[in-house]
Image 1 (cartoon, rainbow, N blue to C red):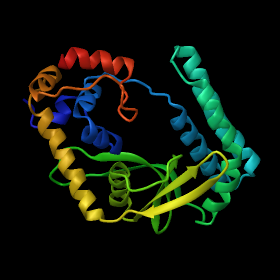
Image 2: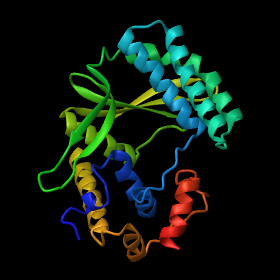
Image 3: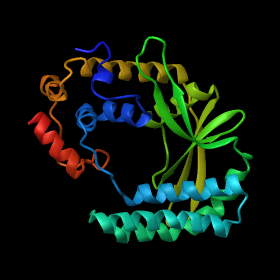
Length: 261
């Protein structure tokens, strides 16, 4: 058995997404480690990426809003084309409704974001590692400013505290040594609003991140054989897809059936 179980299983680094996946569903994370992955296309994700790309373009190019809207629309075109080519089952009708909101949302949100000034970096890879932990945590932050790091989320539900976002923004704070802020573009049918939260209790979230990472390490240390790790973990994944936040793709479902059942 390797002294570094991550290396033995081909895991070069952890990401905020991996940490959050493990916290919610260790079996799903193990399935991904085993190589069973899916590209998940969902209208809310497409919409969120489009809004983020439009705002990023406005901040980095000082571009007119019409041009930023075009950049956002291109995100929809890319996803639609990918889904049509792959035969992925995608709710195009729901996506079209989201797409119709983009121009109005960007028209309102770009001036709000410009109030923060010009970021010193966007879509930037950052890294953090503890001295006593074998691999780093890496991720891509949205917007870095002189005094803070901001991450943009879109939601149609009134935003409130979110442990996943707390951990994600805390990692960015560790990597940049700057105050973490999460920005919600809160969008309803006829209105939109930017709601921002400073991440509180950063030290607590740092402890949470390390505790989760250590559990990931201990789980992989069961064996250099990922199938044995899954078998001996005694995990029982729910593959029903009844939970929208814990969706299993085709390949992930196939892998989980081989690994856990």
